[in-house]
Length: 233
Image (tube, rainbow, N blue to C red; front, side, top):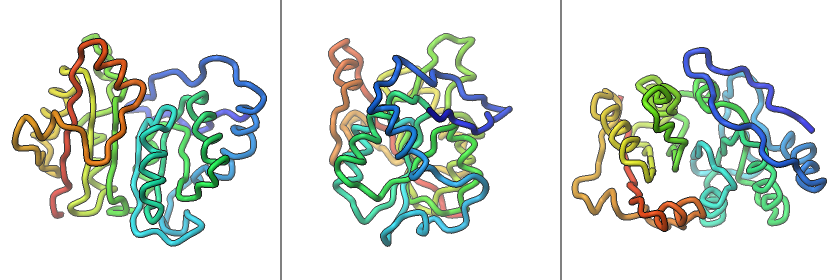
């Protein structure tokens, strides 16, 4: 069974599990046979549209797709969009790949390493949108440096997004929401476009509730759905 081979970012190392329970034979087959076919190439990527077997109108990125519930929904509803999914956790990846194979979905490419290493390899202005949905909050103060959202990663987002491209961030952890808003507010590259509380308390259009979100709500936590857009450069 293959392992992710991407080096970690020395300035923002990847923190999180790579493996959970042992994979079943069918899941191992997905990792060994389907993942290599869908993995992004190493090195700089010059032609984003050329990554997909069919013509695409735009390319979007989802970071940390877990089991793929949200990403699969977006892929099905927008077959004309090419998607790049990032997920280092091999068990979630195996489940996602099984659905891809079963349904014959082709508007997807995969990165199974740290998204902070992928972003500099994408052409500037090549992404239409980035979704970061329910990332690990690392709630303890000493752990906060592990959070994916930082001034540096926002600058990487800004480089990869086209002018007017959107960044969405959803979380049920108020402290992480505030953390992200503080960094968006001081970013020279983004405008937070939510104006009223309902704007960030209401799910995004076409939203599907994932299993994680359902558990969070059942536990009494209130999700926030932030949207920012890339300023014209």
